[in-house]
Image 1 (cartoon, rainbow, N blue to C red):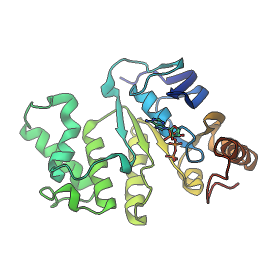
Image 2 (cartoon, protein in one colour):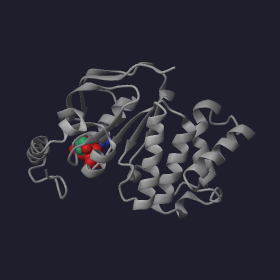
Image 3 (cartoon, rainbow, N blue to C red):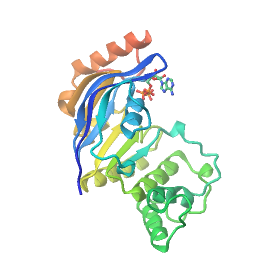
Length: 247
Ligand SMILES: Nc1ncnc2c1ncn2[C@@H]1O[C@H](COP(=O)(O)OP(=O)(O)OP(=O)(O)O)[C@@H](O)[C@H]1O
């Protein structure tokens, strides 16, 4: 059932005239666990959306192994999600089943059981009826992970999944990421915490619009490469890329 790698061939993406991603080549192998790192505005989120097929490329190509969108699960950045929408925790989690039931397919008893199991595995049993707007940031991120669990995707892409999330939730969600990967799924996560990347993510793509390094985390995140990323970011923005982005 396992399918091919996701290959990027000289991928570039522009917004109007802004070249957000330039000349990225490499592949996410099946079953790999990769961090995408780089300064603010480096094109990381843009690249994830392009891999998902949400954005078109200005040049280059992406081989996805299959044309089926259901192969991908995607967690957007928290800032991109509107939590005012009147949905309960249970409704939000069950959206993960859309790929199989269709939007109006109704929820079978089996699907409802899976939904409860998913909520339990992220530690949120009992909160099914709560409105998502009343949850803490950490609880809401747990809901989104439960939704991803239900989606049962082969390739899971997470955009800053632990930003502004408490330490306990980060630990629990990181354990889920590792379980996904242990079960043979490919996981790609945009992350800012280099210590976390070094501790848990064997592969890293470091980019600052252009690729800097892509390979084992040890070889990708050298002080020299981080310095190059920093310098490239300064050239992009005309100022340093912010606290924390230091070798
Ligand atoms: N929809 C859009 N329209 C126009 N420009 C955009 C759009 N989305 C992103 N950009 C620009 O493209 C560049 C890359 O943005 P992107 O969000 O991909 O970077 P990032 O590495 O994910 O940044 P961060 O770490 O701050 O989230 C930035 O200059 C950003 O302002």
